[in-house]
Amino acid sequence: MAIPYTLEFEKPLVEIEAQIEALEAEGDDKDAGFRKEVARLRKSHQTLLKKIYAGLTPWETVRVARHPKRPQFRDYIKLLCKDFCELHGDRRFSDDPAIVTGFGRVGAIKCMLIGHHKGRDTNEKLACHFGCAHPEGYRKALLKMKMAEKFGLPIVTFVDTPGAFPGIGAEQRGQAEAIAVNLLEMSRIETPIVSVVVGEGGSGGALGIAVADRVAMLEHAWYSVISPEGCAAILWKEANAETNNLAATALNLTAKDNKRLGIVDEIIKEPVGGAHRDPAHAARNIEKWITDQLIELERVKPTLLPGRRYERFRKLGEYETLKPARDGTGD
Image 1 (cartoon, one colour):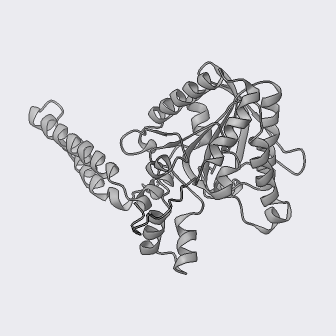
Image 2 (cartoon, rainbow, N blue to C red):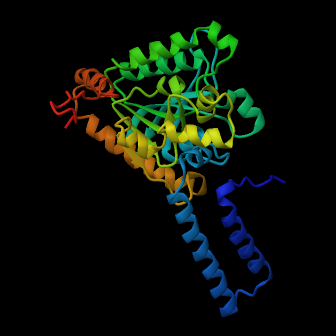
Image 3 (cartoon, rainbow, N blue to C red):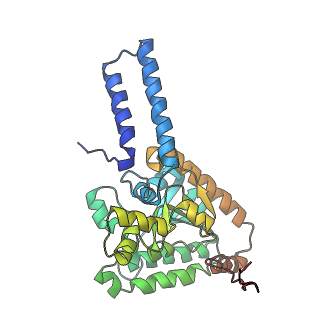
């Protein structure tokens, strides 16, 4: 029997769920008092769920993004795609299961779909290296993007990785070069590209398939140059509950932070309690955003897209230096 996974801040919800289960197991559904008590508990559960998820800290958001039941790319393919045809291999070394590619339809729009996949059970997670792609994964992704450009189809990418795989073999086969080439080539592809961060968006491993015309994040995803644990290990020489919390806050990695800083264009709402509680609802929200963006981008001449894409990313981190006033106040 599988052991249920409960986040620390969700424990009050588990207590209410246990009370509901106990009542339903022993109560009489025809009894008006029983139905009233169950309805009261369900309402309390929903109210508390909304309250908890409305006030998540950055580190708690990271925990939600890593929830083992959170929908992954292959789940979204089943929920929102029609006629998906998977494509394999980079024509150089091998097929990396950490990045899945293929043709499909989102709504009525034919497109190339590319996304990280972490794996669901232990064997699949190990095969996918927990969503950490090797250079052959990024080369596979780019090869399929070029194919989409050839046929005039838009590209849709789903980002969900803690980062690119850091192993010796990956480095020997040109991990950094593969990601760098993707950044260069994606910036000048003459077909619309939209990207959604659905879970984790870690460093260059995420950006390797996220140089897009429009970028969105799910409400409880994170997107940053480094994971909180990696940041904590560098700054405080130790990753623990306290330093992870501090690092997550300092990194400004939540969807709200990224939207405020102009790194992403939109936040896609999740069902109350996270996408893992209602994957179909989350998929519908993602589908609507993707189709809206692609319909709008189809009106833009393909030759104009690279320049607009370049300007979008060039503006990231832009700031203004003000000359100090004569009185020294800077106003």
